[in-house]
Image (cartoon, rainbow, N blue to C red; front, side):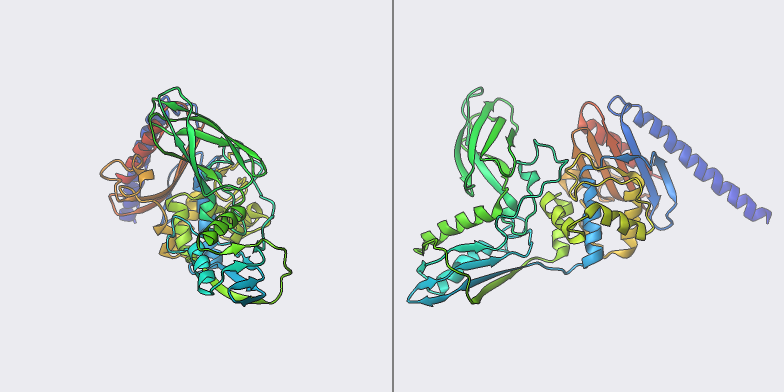
Length: 458
């Protein structure tokens, strides 16, 4: 009895000493100029036991930025499994006679976010469609190209900042998506202080004019931004790009991917000698042309987290709930035994600055995922010493290769949540949310890295 009591006392002293060292390190870290006035939430738990290793305001709801993608990716896998696919079906109507199609080409969109995505170069939807039309011997289409969902209103989360919605990372999710719903403006710059010129726009954006006010700068950085909403007839481009560039890419959000796709398809068909009359013809009997099947859901989740693709995250959110994403997420978490009372969600990607989540919620989700999801989820998280986004967070020998985590960043926010393997071989689930810091964001990342070093070294 005395022996076991002595052993318990020794363990208690050891734990208390370790916590005391962490508390001392914490005070030193959180006292640094960049974060001493910031709102900070931290929750670190042992994955195997669920015991708290360290916490600091774990229940404070803070902006998580892209860390919120952990919800959409984990819950989409939970509800749909690894192998879900989207299908996009293409038909032609009417009859083909001596190279003339008296009918329409009809595309039935299935919500696939990966059509001709740069992340999935093998899904060549445009090439496949053009090839199928050519192989049918069609030289003239006495009809039109119809995308069934064309004209659906764009749904923008009300809290997305105006300066984000027209830039590539603000690409909206639609029933029909194309080329990551992104287009590229190629600018030519001269001497610093002179105005740039638009060289080309790829693909073209029908019905939209671009007003270019971008200037050349001596700074070697892209500081050009696009302004305007989905229904804007003129988009404004302002800011600066590096001087003396023959072509410099600025990427924008393709607000109407169906119109962009149709315009490019018409151009491609014309290049193959196929005439499109654009006549209104009633939709008669349909003949299957081909069906494109998307990559597996596990592959979409992989790029959602690895490359922090907002478009993919919003697509995953649609799988979870097309009508009330926030309520459904909270209900799912509650069903998993995770306290969801402090959560405010406005989107599935983390672009909204109105999102707020306690650190403990993410940590508990990570523990749940480790025990209930396949390795696909963990493999989707960026890895230290491998993925660019973790280069600062993992810049220490005991962190490199031992950290898997989703990053999050926006103005005044640096966030990180994932798994950390300690020197003792234990796996920790952790979340660190820093809001309203001042100064250099790299310094904030270094502070987070130094805190992780303390946990890894225990």
